[in-house]
Length: 300
Image (cartoon, rainbow, N blue to C red):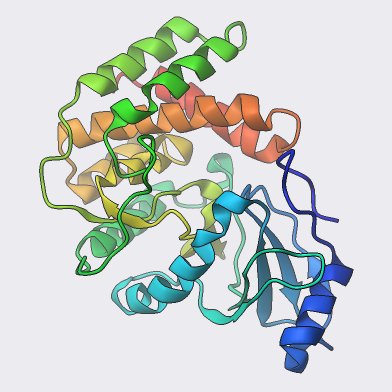
């Protein structure tokens, strides 16, 4: 059984996934199947044979990601300098599981924590080039940010109440005054004034795959849409520091207002993540704590 991240999530298991495969994709049902340990919060992942992966939404809010990835990843992939997931088949609800789900091509690689980066500056430049390429893709028909005010790609002020509440919840664990100061500075930055561009929406270290120390793939496009790309800057404090953060910013050519909003988004994501997943996702919480420490140590 996959680790439970949410009180009302749907539990999955090897036997459940095997049943779904037998019923819907019998050509793959005989392949070995095993759960994949992951700090991802929206989906449970299973490796199917050597070349495939099964991905199942854990919770209702992640369901729309299935159709989005099947629709848009094949269109985005040819324009991007790094590998992205390749959806092969879309499953339907079945006994014991109420949501659509997916079979993907397995992408080789591993996550790397900030202290284990082989070449931080090269990684920063590679990722910046990916973001730039993504932003240059035609947005015709592209998905817009979700309807909620706090959706990624929308103005930061939509996250104000939740961010301030999270900072209050972490009082005694973090420097609440410093965190509030960073947040308020970000809110003062002008909103995105240019036409909407593509953003990934969830650029965390856990969504980057490395092979022999070199960045090879970006995964988990469930939050991708078009709008303000500042949310894609949160990786600047999650994975980079000093020279590599400066290289990332330079390679992006990002303006001061977008950088400030990105720093605010990174803080918001981290402080909201920590109290929610404190007891269930130690890897993700450690990453969020590292990100927050980097933000508070950075003068902006």
